[in-house]
Image 1: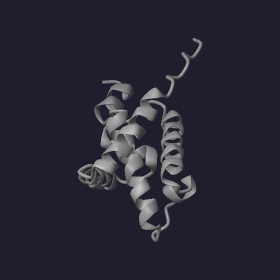
Image 2 (image 1 turned 180 degrees about the vertical axis):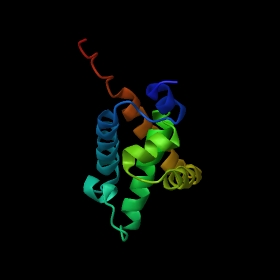
Image 3 (image 1 turned 90 degrees about the horizontal axis):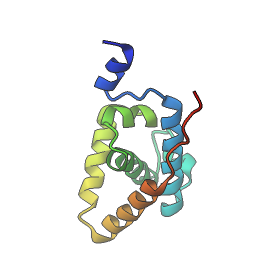
Image 4 (image 1 turned 135 degrees about the horizontal axis):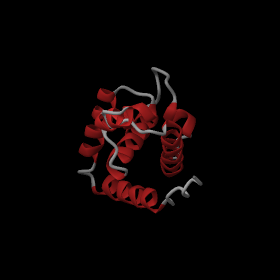
Length: 123
C-alpha cells in the first residue's frame, strides 16, 4: 500500500492547496449570496454571529454534497473537526425543508457545478 492509497482510503486529497482554493471559492460565493463577509464565514472566533455560522455550515454542506467530498476532506479543507462538518451537514439538511432555503441552495449548487475544471498540468 502506497502513501497515495492510504490517503485515498481516508478521503484525504493529494493537493491540499487546491482544496483550500476551492473552499475560498465556495466561501466567497456563499458570502456574496448571503451578504456575509467571507472573513466572517471562515473566522475561528468562538463568538461568531448566527448568520456567519449558518453561512459556514452552508459552505461545508455545499463542499460535501456538490463536490462529493468525504467529511474528512471537507473538515480538513475548512480547518474544522470531522464531527463539526458532520453537524453542519445535518443542520443544513434540516433547513432544506424550507422551500426558499432549498431553492437558494439549489442555485448555489448550480453555480459550483458550473465552475471550470483546472487545466491539465504540463508533465
